[in-house]
Image (tube, rainbow, N blue to C red; front, side):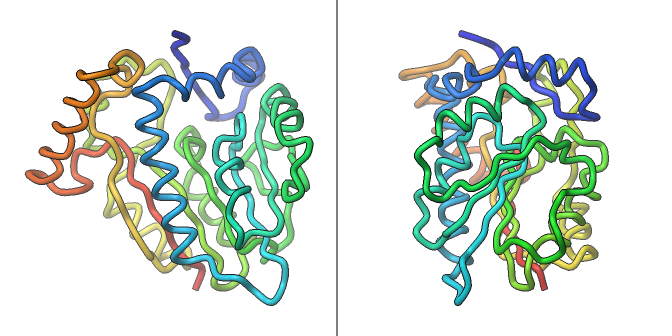
Length: 251
């Protein structure tokens, strides 16, 4: 089992080489039982939010995925009937090459762009109806600036669906080799409201330290999932969750 150590923060050359080395193996890593469970939580929140808050427009509906990686989120968005046009951004040439091959026959995915998401995004104001970003914003020290950029490129009423690590999570027990920028629910809410977003929905993700999802499976995984549900009943949906999933709308 390949153990991934991932970093988008600052997007230095060494980081780019790391991502290029991982390439398409990142896609297969999500098929492992524990990681598949984590992925299912993210995708379920994404799909539910899209269904609730992204309505069909008179114009063609455009969506963008920031940090598209090997295309896990793009693949989910591609199946959304409401969306007409899709674009993706990533810093890794190898990731983009893999996506281009993976989606070579896609009628919706129009552009896959090489770009550092910590910099100003290469789009005009009010370009998109939806922006998504899972497991990408957190690797950037200027994550609040990225949120501002997403507000800029979204049309009025457009939705932004993303995640951020929870500072209260017990995931601090993991031996994380890369910098991750965490936040609190309060800080996240304040940042979004100041930026011009209306919060539509917030949900907590899995609770256990990340390394466990790389190793557990079968009955042990089922027991861990039951344990997480118990903790959420006792401590609430978000308090101990590793990630805060959030859907918001540009006012």
